[in-house]
Image (cartoon, rainbow, N blue to C red; front, side, top):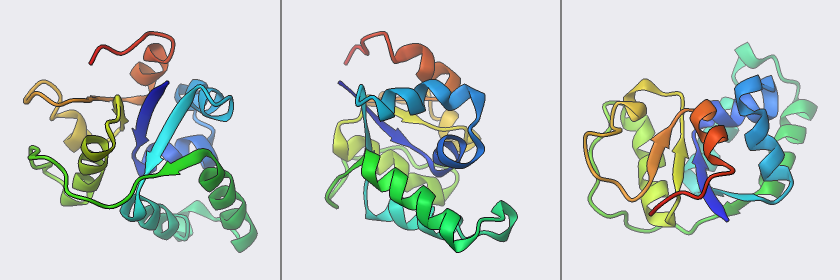
Length: 143
């Protein structure tokens, strides 16, 4: 079973915006065909972002999205990540670290700072945008 780390914008695409590029990820997650990995730092960021006024979410909507997401993810304990490249955006480093610590196959992101790391260094996981991740869901990921 493929193991994915989703950055916060991709989570919003799945649970708030229903972005077409992410629909296959949501279907695979709900069907139990993939595992979505989170840790305390990524959950904290999502919880904070859900309260942003531009999302126009009521407290009930925030609770609904949070509850649905939490029911579908696996929480990874905090720990040390192996040496990794530094992401230009320090807020995104936590996703790299989680992917490395958890043995993820994919880090799914739309963030340019993360995607720029692809090909620059050898990682044990791939960093891909949602559309590429969807194309890989049915293809075994070589390790």
